[in-house]
Length: 113
Length: 111
Image 1: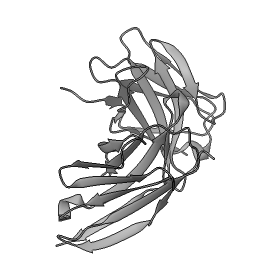
Image 2 (image 1 turned 120 degrees about the horizontal axis):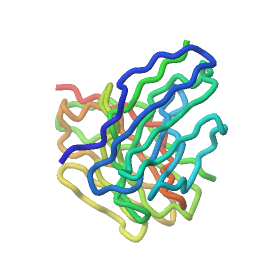
Image 3 (image 1 turned 90 degrees about the vertical axis):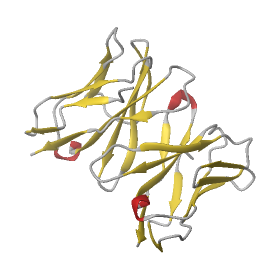
Image 4 (image 1 turned 120 degrees about the vertical axis):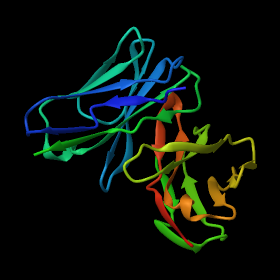
């Protein structure tokens, strides 16, 4: 069974630009989560999508947004990039609303210069 | 109240030793406590998890001990091997399926 996949592996952007990160969940999983892993700040919850709807949001500004498609894949958009947005962005998936186990993908390394 | 405090930050043990990582929390609404293992350049991998109505859970060489009254839980790695060298994160889940992570413990197992 394929795990969570993310693309691209690495992304380099300039301050002020927009970044789009993509995630495909494990087959059969309907929930997708986004986390940010920044140096010195640890892993922080960003967003949770289930059945195409945003279900929960972490303490991040509105320029972090996303969506979930009918095939349950998801996209994270970060607008007006700032230097401190440089981090590893991790996507996880679970069976659904009550799914306990969140399985993570390998992440997208975003570097903002 | 949403924090999960993890200690120590780093740990060095000899092969066969038992690294012990501790986590503490304040929020009594947390209902699920997973541990993740992360190797450099990889995403976190789910290792083992426990619910607050269970005091201990074992899976292979990994054991979680849970003390609900003290709001603490810990991970023991039995018969540790050099391949266990990684960063370990505890986490706790609140409403909205949000995982709150501890700061991580870097474990080095020397041959």
